[in-house]
Length: 416
Ligand code: EPZ
Image (cartoon, rainbow, N blue to C red; front, top):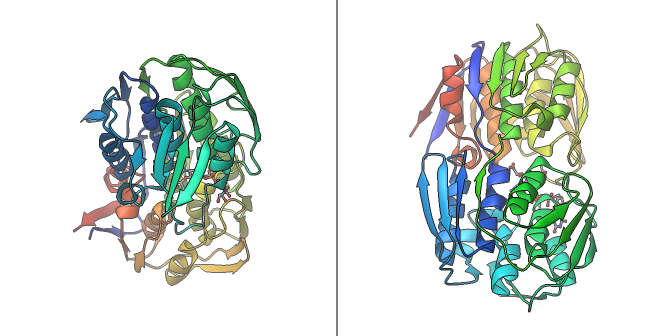
């Protein structure tokens, strides 16, 4: 099993390009199921989750061709409406096949995604909203089965803001009869990117990016050629790496608007940040200041940046309080950071981080995607050597992260 080995203490400097967004690419690739044509996508990141999506689309009968960061999906010959356990268990986001399959094939059978390291992550809100659109929902043998005639528009209010829930129902509602209004909808840039692509396929959507989205159903959609937006979490991860190790690092090909909350917090921690049109340059302060963060749905501070910021607070001058309000179990990285000498106390959904002068290198275990990024960042500033194990978590959402860090001057390698 691969591990990443880092000798800490090097200052990162130079320019790094951001890849396409995992969390935008996944729903957009599943939206190809809504047409009986051939759609093409560029700036698709090369990730394990993209590969899992390719496998599921192929299992459903689509023909998928990939060449570097380009992907072509021919969804004319779908042969089944079932997303099996063996594929769904690899990637929870496979649940995003549900909406498009019910909308196009009038039925879907999708394995229920179990819980994951960061929380129970039920899909009850997806199912409740799909039922409101007229689908008959049955849960049996670990699968959800949804059947419907043509879906019917409805007024839906999500009890909690849910990103993939909003995306799933958007993809179901575009072919429904009549108008659907989604309230308390997610406002994430990935939702807006999906709505943009659906609109270019012929859907009639307004209000994406706000908490109220209106969808007027159409009879059919056409295939599309679309470019995937830059990954804002990868952007944020590089910004933290620059602030931690000194920089300056210029992050190119990113969308600065999408990381405004991260820019604000890094400035509060003392970093110097220059924002360009499609780039951000970060220079770290002599010593990071302790600050407080609280994760929130977009445009608040992203939960997918919480672990990376905890490393920052671990070496800060002073105390930082980190409150996680989205997932109930997203502090698993704390025990590994403590093994590296961090001083962190957890009480409920709040971690109080007292900065130490220096972390010390150690063998550590990654437990989920963002926790693995956090441990790599910790290794960049720790004394001596850190070995991050189970990096398959990292490969799910970061394209060649160690190579990108090495190009910025880090002493980092992947070992088999
Ligand atoms: C998306 O997950 C992202 N994944 C996550 O990124 C991200 O952390 C999360 O949104 C929050 O920003 C993708 O886009 C593929 P939610 P999602 O539904 O949609 C509860 C990463 O690291 N909830 O917005 O699954 C849920 O348990 C990943 O890239 C219900 O109770 O998250 C959570 O507490 C990790 N019932 C909260 O809502 C539901 O039916 C928000 O979850 C749905 C959600």
